[in-house]
Length: 132
Image 1 (cartoon, rainbow, N blue to C red):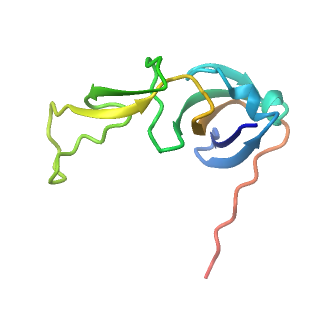
Image 2 (cartoon, helix red, strand yellow):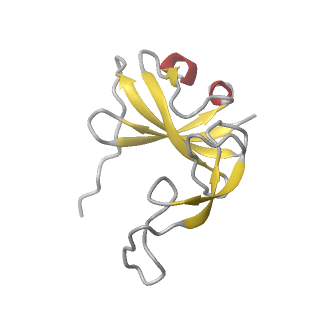
């Protein structure tokens, strides 16, 4: 039994969070960043999604090109790195060792980021802002 939080980025530039539970969540297992997945497999008929990233249960981001579950890598300006030194100033050429997750969705992954490639017949519902 697997649970994922799906953050779905729409074509309008908004994002929607949905909770995916088994059996829909089981269809995401063993998929990789960059793969396309049908909306019918996730419970959204008519939609088509692309997996763009995610994070594991400890909050470490997923990164394309890493095959292991978790790994410490020396990275510069890219995924999982902000580019600021300890004083909060930008420092060109700065490299840091960071822990990141691999590109495959496994049971330790908690959040999956999806991008809408093809819209379905029913639009997503966005929570309304409260006016005070």
